[in-house]
Image (cartoon, rainbow, N blue to C red; front, side):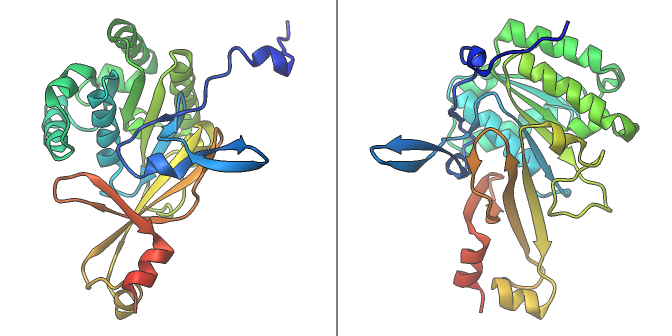
Length: 282
Protein backbone atom coordinates (compact mmCIF):
# COMPACT_ATOMS: atom_id res chain seq x y z
CA UNK A 1 0.00 0.00 0.00
CA UNK A 2 1.34 3.42 -0.96
CA UNK A 3 1.83 5.71 2.03
CA UNK A 4 1.34 9.42 1.63
CA UNK A 5 0.74 12.48 3.81
CA UNK A 6 -0.89 15.82 3.52
CA UNK A 7 1.83 18.36 4.28
CA UNK A 8 0.05 19.59 7.41
CA UNK A 9 0.20 16.10 8.88
CA UNK A 10 4.00 16.31 9.05
CA UNK A 11 4.11 19.36 11.32
CA UNK A 12 4.41 17.37 14.54
CA UNK A 13 7.24 15.25 13.12
CA UNK A 14 9.25 18.12 11.67
CA UNK A 15 12.49 18.84 13.63
CA UNK A 16 13.03 22.27 15.12
CA UNK A 17 15.54 24.40 13.25
CA UNK A 18 18.47 25.42 15.43
CA UNK A 19 22.24 25.11 15.37
CA UNK A 20 24.55 22.52 16.87
CA UNK A 21 27.79 24.44 17.63
CA UNK A 22 31.02 23.41 15.91
CA UNK A 23 33.33 25.68 17.87
CA UNK A 24 34.23 27.57 14.67
CA UNK A 25 32.92 30.51 12.64
CA UNK A 26 30.78 28.02 10.73
CA UNK A 27 28.29 28.61 13.55
CA UNK A 28 27.65 32.07 12.08
CA UNK A 29 27.70 30.94 8.44
CA UNK A 30 24.48 28.91 8.65
CA UNK A 31 21.42 31.10 9.13
CA UNK A 32 17.64 31.26 9.17
CA UNK A 33 15.25 34.01 8.10
CA UNK A 34 12.82 35.37 10.68
CA UNK A 35 10.19 38.06 10.40
CA UNK A 36 10.54 41.08 12.68
CA UNK A 37 7.69 43.53 12.22
CA UNK A 38 7.37 44.28 8.52
CA UNK A 39 10.77 42.98 7.51
CA UNK A 40 12.68 39.74 7.34
CA UNK A 41 15.97 39.42 9.19
CA UNK A 42 18.80 36.93 8.71
CA UNK A 43 19.89 35.36 12.00
CA UNK A 44 22.86 33.03 12.57
CA UNK A 45 21.76 29.49 13.27
CA UNK A 46 24.53 28.96 15.83
CA UNK A 47 25.94 25.79 14.28
CA UNK A 48 25.19 23.11 11.73
CA UNK A 49 21.46 22.36 11.53
CA UNK A 50 20.07 20.11 14.26
CA UNK A 51 19.61 16.51 13.01
CA UNK A 52 21.40 17.26 9.74
CA UNK A 53 24.00 14.92 8.28
CA UNK A 54 26.86 16.99 6.89
CA UNK A 55 29.68 15.87 4.62
CA UNK A 56 33.24 17.16 5.10
CA UNK A 57 35.32 16.61 1.98
CA UNK A 58 38.73 17.74 0.82
CA UNK A 59 42.19 16.70 -0.30
CA UNK A 60 44.58 15.11 2.21
CA UNK A 61 45.71 17.42 5.03
CA UNK A 62 43.03 19.99 4.27
CA UNK A 63 41.66 19.94 7.83
CA UNK A 64 38.68 17.55 7.62
CA UNK A 65 39.52 15.44 10.65
CA UNK A 66 40.64 18.53 12.58
CA UNK A 67 37.22 20.10 12.04
CA UNK A 68 35.40 16.88 12.97
CA UNK A 69 37.44 16.54 16.16
CA UNK A 70 36.85 20.19 17.08
CA UNK A 71 33.11 19.63 16.66
CA UNK A 72 33.28 16.54 18.88
CA UNK A 73 35.17 18.38 21.62
CA UNK A 74 32.83 21.38 21.48
CA UNK A 75 29.75 19.21 21.86
CA UNK A 76 31.27 17.03 24.58
CA UNK A 77 32.39 20.09 26.52
CA UNK A 78 28.82 21.42 26.36
CA UNK A 79 27.64 18.20 27.97
CA UNK A 80 26.31 16.38 24.90
CA UNK A 81 27.24 12.80 24.06
CA UNK A 82 29.16 12.17 20.83
CA UNK A 83 29.66 8.85 19.08
CA UNK A 84 32.97 8.93 17.18
CA UNK A 85 33.47 6.08 14.69
CA UNK A 86 37.15 6.09 13.74
CA UNK A 87 37.81 4.21 10.51
CA UNK A 88 41.26 5.57 9.64
CA UNK A 89 43.15 6.24 12.86
CA UNK A 90 43.35 3.70 15.74
CA UNK A 91 41.47 4.84 18.83
CA UNK A 92 44.51 5.46 21.01
CA UNK A 93 45.84 7.97 18.46
CA UNK A 94 42.43 9.66 18.44
CA UNK A 95 42.65 9.97 22.24
CA UNK A 96 45.96 11.84 21.95
CA UNK A 97 44.62 14.20 19.28
CA UNK A 98 41.46 14.99 21.25
CA UNK A 99 43.38 15.61 24.46
CA UNK A 100 45.74 18.10 22.80
CA UNK A 101 42.90 19.93 21.05
CA UNK A 102 40.85 20.04 24.25
CA UNK A 103 43.68 21.89 25.97
CA UNK A 104 43.96 24.33 23.05
CA UNK A 105 40.21 24.98 23.12
CA UNK A 106 40.17 25.41 26.92
CA UNK A 107 37.74 22.51 27.16
CA UNK A 108 37.27 20.46 30.32
CA UNK A 109 38.95 17.22 29.26
CA UNK A 110 37.26 15.26 32.04
CA UNK A 111 33.92 16.13 30.44
CA UNK A 112 35.29 15.37 26.97
CA UNK A 113 36.54 11.94 28.09
CA UNK A 114 33.17 11.12 29.60
CA UNK A 115 31.02 12.37 26.74
CA UNK A 116 32.82 11.00 23.68
CA UNK A 117 32.11 7.34 22.91
CA UNK A 118 34.52 5.70 20.43
CA UNK A 119 33.99 2.78 18.08
CA UNK A 120 37.31 1.69 16.58
CA UNK A 121 36.75 0.25 13.10
CA UNK A 122 40.28 1.03 11.95
CA UNK A 123 41.66 -2.38 12.90
CA UNK A 124 38.44 -4.41 12.70
CA UNK A 125 37.74 -5.84 9.24
CA UNK A 126 34.24 -6.97 10.20
CA UNK A 127 33.14 -3.48 11.17
CA UNK A 128 34.73 -1.88 8.09
CA UNK A 129 33.52 -4.42 5.54
CA UNK A 130 30.08 -5.23 6.96
CA UNK A 131 27.77 -2.18 7.24
CA UNK A 132 25.18 -4.13 9.24
CA UNK A 133 27.75 -5.19 11.85
CA UNK A 134 28.91 -1.60 12.25
CA UNK A 135 25.39 -0.20 12.43
CA UNK A 136 24.41 -2.80 15.03
CA UNK A 137 27.40 -1.73 17.15
CA UNK A 138 26.55 1.94 16.63
CA UNK A 139 22.89 1.34 17.56
CA UNK A 140 23.93 -0.32 20.81
CA UNK A 141 26.29 2.56 21.68
CA UNK A 142 23.69 5.21 20.83
CA UNK A 143 21.04 3.54 22.99
CA UNK A 144 23.33 2.74 25.91
CA UNK A 145 25.20 6.05 26.01
CA UNK A 146 22.34 8.25 24.72
CA UNK A 147 24.47 10.04 22.14
CA UNK A 148 23.01 12.90 20.13
CA UNK A 149 25.87 13.45 17.65
CA UNK A 150 27.71 10.95 15.46
CA UNK A 151 30.94 11.34 13.47
CA UNK A 152 32.26 8.80 10.96
CA UNK A 153 35.88 9.50 9.99
CA UNK A 154 35.94 8.50 7.28
CA UNK A 155 32.84 7.21 5.48
CA UNK A 156 35.17 6.54 2.53
CA UNK A 157 36.93 3.82 4.51
CA UNK A 158 33.71 1.81 4.53
CA UNK A 159 33.75 1.37 0.74
CA UNK A 160 37.36 1.99 -0.25
CA UNK A 161 37.64 -1.25 -2.26
CA UNK A 162 34.09 -1.17 -3.61
CA UNK A 163 33.32 2.37 -4.71
CA UNK A 164 30.58 1.08 -7.02
CA UNK A 165 28.62 0.49 -3.79
CA UNK A 166 29.31 3.96 -2.37
CA UNK A 167 25.80 5.30 -2.91
CA UNK A 168 24.18 2.26 -1.30
CA UNK A 169 26.49 2.30 1.74
CA UNK A 170 26.24 6.05 2.29
CA UNK A 171 22.45 5.87 2.02
CA UNK A 172 22.32 3.14 4.67
CA UNK A 173 24.32 5.17 7.18
CA UNK A 174 22.44 8.38 6.33
CA UNK A 175 19.09 6.67 6.98
CA UNK A 176 20.52 5.09 10.14
CA UNK A 177 21.46 8.48 11.62
CA UNK A 178 18.05 9.88 10.70
CA UNK A 179 16.31 6.93 12.38
CA UNK A 180 18.31 7.41 15.59
CA UNK A 181 17.93 11.22 15.48
CA UNK A 182 21.63 11.99 15.38
CA UNK A 183 23.27 15.15 14.13
CA UNK A 184 25.97 13.65 11.95
CA UNK A 185 29.24 14.37 10.22
CA UNK A 186 30.68 12.16 7.48
CA UNK A 187 34.31 12.78 6.57
CA UNK A 188 34.99 11.77 2.96
CA UNK A 189 38.25 11.50 1.04
CA UNK A 190 38.97 12.72 -2.48
CA UNK A 191 40.69 10.75 -5.21
CA UNK A 192 43.69 12.33 -6.95
CA UNK A 193 41.79 12.93 -10.20
CA UNK A 194 38.99 14.89 -8.52
CA UNK A 195 38.97 18.68 -8.47
CA UNK A 196 39.93 19.84 -4.99
CA UNK A 197 37.35 22.64 -4.83
CA UNK A 198 34.28 20.51 -5.62
CA UNK A 199 31.94 18.45 -3.43
CA UNK A 200 33.02 15.30 -5.29
CA UNK A 201 34.80 12.60 -3.30
CA UNK A 202 35.63 8.90 -3.57
CA UNK A 203 32.54 7.24 -5.01
CA UNK A 204 31.81 10.32 -7.11
CA UNK A 205 29.01 12.55 -5.86
CA UNK A 206 27.39 9.70 -3.94
CA UNK A 207 27.95 11.35 -0.56
CA UNK A 208 27.09 14.89 -1.61
CA UNK A 209 23.84 13.86 -3.31
CA UNK A 210 22.55 11.98 -0.27
CA UNK A 211 23.59 14.07 2.74
CA UNK A 212 21.94 17.31 3.86
CA UNK A 213 24.94 19.48 3.03
CA UNK A 214 28.61 19.50 2.14
CA UNK A 215 31.52 21.54 3.49
CA UNK A 216 34.54 21.61 1.17
CA UNK A 217 38.00 22.18 2.61
CA UNK A 218 40.89 22.94 0.29
CA UNK A 219 44.50 24.07 0.34
CA UNK A 220 46.70 25.87 -2.16
CA UNK A 221 50.47 25.84 -2.20
CA UNK A 222 51.94 29.28 -2.89
CA UNK A 223 54.42 28.46 -5.66
CA UNK A 224 54.68 31.39 -8.06
CA UNK A 225 55.25 35.14 -8.07
CA UNK A 226 51.65 35.53 -9.16
CA UNK A 227 50.48 33.66 -6.05
CA UNK A 228 52.71 35.81 -3.86
CA UNK A 229 51.29 38.97 -5.43
CA UNK A 230 47.68 37.83 -5.21
CA UNK A 231 47.62 36.34 -1.72
CA UNK A 232 50.44 38.25 -0.01
CA UNK A 233 52.00 35.01 1.25
CA UNK A 234 55.58 33.78 0.80
CA UNK A 235 56.45 31.02 -1.65
CA UNK A 236 56.14 27.61 -0.05
CA UNK A 237 53.37 28.57 2.35
CA UNK A 238 49.86 27.09 2.25
CA UNK A 239 46.55 28.92 1.90
CA UNK A 240 43.61 26.96 3.30
CA UNK A 241 40.00 27.59 2.32
CA UNK A 242 36.58 26.38 3.46
CA UNK A 243 33.20 26.67 1.73
CA UNK A 244 29.69 25.47 2.45
CA UNK A 245 28.88 23.87 -0.90
CA UNK A 246 25.21 23.43 -0.12
CA UNK A 247 22.67 22.72 2.62
CA UNK A 248 19.10 21.69 1.95
CA UNK A 249 17.87 22.43 5.48
CA UNK A 250 18.71 26.09 5.93
CA UNK A 251 20.35 29.15 4.43
CA UNK A 252 24.12 29.44 4.41
CA UNK A 253 27.01 31.68 3.42
CA UNK A 254 28.24 30.41 0.04
CA UNK A 255 31.48 32.39 -0.04
CA UNK A 256 34.90 30.79 0.05
CA UNK A 257 36.58 31.63 3.37
CA UNK A 258 40.22 31.50 4.37
CA UNK A 259 41.11 29.54 7.49
CA UNK A 260 44.18 28.44 9.38
CA UNK A 261 45.06 25.34 11.33
CA UNK A 262 46.68 26.89 14.36
CA UNK A 263 49.88 25.65 15.95
CA UNK A 264 47.64 23.96 18.55
CA UNK A 265 45.82 21.99 15.86
CA UNK A 266 42.52 23.88 15.84
CA UNK A 267 40.49 25.54 13.09
CA UNK A 268 40.42 29.35 12.89
CA UNK A 269 38.24 30.74 10.08
CA UNK A 270 39.58 34.20 9.28
CA UNK A 271 37.77 36.03 6.47
CA UNK A 272 36.08 35.61 3.07
CA UNK A 273 38.70 34.96 0.38
CA UNK A 274 37.94 38.19 -1.51
CA UNK A 275 38.41 40.29 1.64
CA UNK A 276 41.56 38.38 2.54
CA UNK A 277 43.04 39.12 -0.89
CA UNK A 278 42.17 42.81 -0.58
CA UNK A 279 43.89 43.04 2.79
CA UNK A 280 46.95 40.92 1.93
CA UNK A 281 47.36 41.03 -1.84
CA UNK A 282 49.32 43.66 -3.70
